[in-house]
Length: 323
Image (cartoon, rainbow, N blue to C red; front, side, top):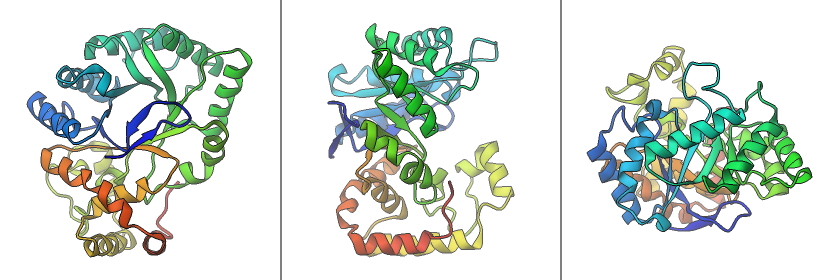
């Protein structure tokens, strides 16, 4: 496992990291969570990602139970704050919600602090300066070591940096955007100038495009128990024709390239994300040790993707890209 600096900070995170979205609490109980996290940790993953909204806090609770088995100075854990409940002050990025929700997350995980704390989405109802000041407070008081954003537009990130610089506040260190073979423009176009200007770390998620880049849907059939089978939002996407003939053809062609290296489409897709030097860590999900093992092998495949192979991949997905 290779380790990369989180943007311009001195913190080092594993280039592959393990996330809890959808799986923890919904598809995985505590025993399976512990088994997968132990395997990940023993094989070099030191960064684990969750959020207060994942299964209404259950994912944080399960992750916290598993983390108790690891030395605290050997892992990096993140959570994300925005959605806690339905009452007026249980959502968003106000100072009240950020402080209360962060403390509740720490209670669920039984931790004194998280390493990384994200503003999970931009909040149009809260001034950016209020969010920056609240995050500054949380970091200075030791409840988090670094703070960042997730799915924030570039102009809002710039606004946060400029306010932080002017008022001597701690600025964001990282952004967590979607990035994969089919969704590239946010990272490669919109965020690229901000990343270069502020040495912003990118901890990208959905590297397998919600499973579309695993090959499991190569025939346009949704397997029982898959995300497109059990999650309503993905069921609607499937009904609306997300599996086009062009996409299915591209998936088969990409699978052939992976096969040339003795790998899988999942490994190829993860390795492709790792080729971007601006990416600090690629967050993936896994429901079993077998899936974990497969995904971890992507770290070896990245060295095989030379310029020629990368051009072949680009040619295949040209026209399929989503913003």
